[in-house]
Image (tube, rainbow, N blue to C red):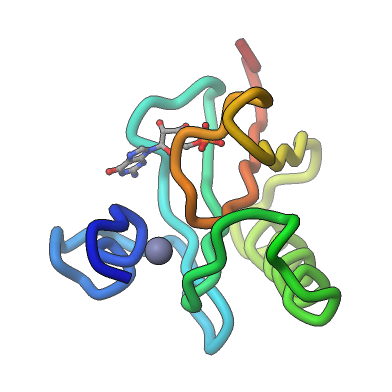
Length: 104
Ligand code: 5GP
Ligand code: ZN
């Protein structure tokens, strides 16, 4: 989607390094980390938020959380999905935060 920062990242416009990638999602480091490890799981398809997300896609994204944490050896972590402006969502392309260690 035009003017979506995460769509641009997914397209490779900024050369962002992906910690993990498959047919469903990419995972990259948050630019403003709120923990020692702060990753974002982002679907390749543009979906604004959890309200707009199918059960099938959220299931696949949670599977990506499991895969990337195993791959990175992250055993204890918090997952966060902010839905809507009032809940603190700033980027309106669905993403799952993975936070581990020194969570602020
Ligand atoms: P939200 O508040 O929408 O749940 O989270 C958006 C997150 O995206 C924030 O933690 C913010 O630091 C991160 N973010 C915003 N723009 C960029 C960017 O251009 N690159 C990366 N890697 N993270 C971003
Ligand atoms: Zn997008």
